[in-house]
Length: 191
Image 1 (cartoon, rainbow, N blue to C red):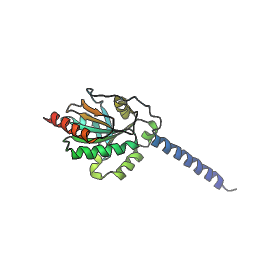
Image 2: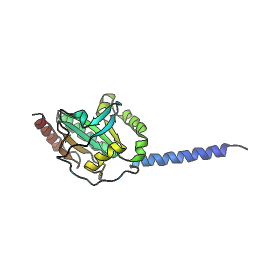
Image 3: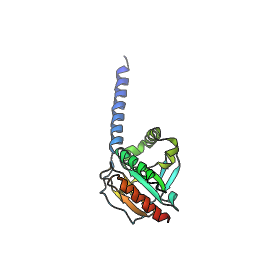
Image 4: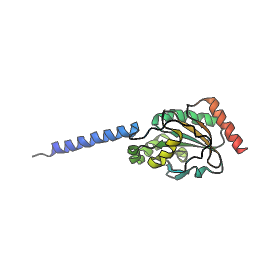
């Protein structure tokens, strides 16, 4: 008696499970939804992530001493908004550390963090890897609660002062005038 049907059945079951897991990973999985909120005046919560360069990065501790701009994305679709912010901030010559912070509080994507990070490395130039720090699972939850996750396709933009306090925030999408505001805020902080 041949075992081919059992092998095909097993392979089919694994394929269905993999498709389901990939669906959960790309749809946000079991993530909680938090209401939007403005955290200006609060200290950024202390969290630890890993850059695409595989460097452990404590936020905000790693940025103390100078202003920093965090571009936080909760969904892959926020990348479009983040890219516009990056271009605008560079054109406005913002003199601060600018860091992308993909923030993924869902359990299922966290289980596939290595695979997700490899996918991001494939689309980001190596020299930019230190400026992308991903937060997964328990490290992501404090940030999700801080800004809210509703309308997750829009980036959350946070300017931190030299001590890690939030001095500017936006969650309504990129506009050139906002990039200029960030440049002015950072200049005042450095002043």
